[in-house]
Length: 318
Image (cartoon, rainbow, N blue to C red):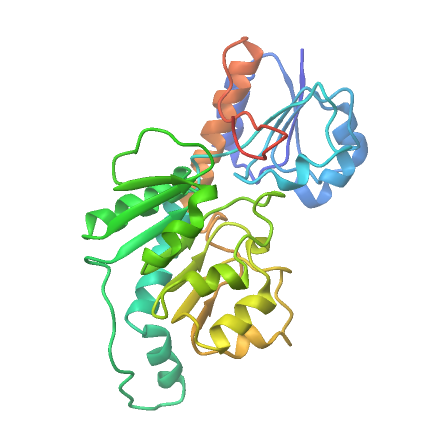
């Protein structure tokens, strides 16, 4: 009989689904902000992103099922014991995040952000030429579920799509060319739109350097829907302020929240949203998280293969 701690904001129907999957287990439910170290210490299975600092490498914890796709906080040394299996919610966020970043891309391509700024000032202005997704070359860096969803939407509207991922594999449907991360510099100069869905790892930290931005087209758009630490905010400000690329749309920053005094806020050619694309604003996302959690709970208890096991070395699912 396993003790299961759930720190998701579940309703009764979600509890029924989880308890059916974990029949015979003892369930405890707590808002994540109210969960205590004692509650965590008693749990053999945790569903949801319990505060990493409170886990304390619990020897009792057998399975931690995250409600996020990112596992950055939990792969650090000393957070989880060697016997804890870590799984994430890859697959739950593809529609929400990809569509959010797609909307930002359209907004920048058609300069709608500038017209919104003009509307706020009651100004009737013409912001000049725009660009199109049709026949554009779209480079997707981080071709997981979210990146592939984005690439397929772009492809459906007539874009030429290039994907970049860690390991080479067969080119998936919706992607015209596929490269590995160490070939990034080769493909950056070809892209009209660069969209990043990279997780936060040592390998991706500040991967978008001044030198890499210099490789991009002057009229390129840069989008970041992965992790803020893929690019230094000061570097991005310098690049955008100097008009080395046309514009950027970012849902993530380093640090978060972006300080109100940071000059990046003042630029007209950047669109910033406060890391909200991957939360539960699209109700379907939470339902997917619960489904993945129930599936993995049942699989673990019945010795079946688990979905989305995280590799502690890379931070990605295996």
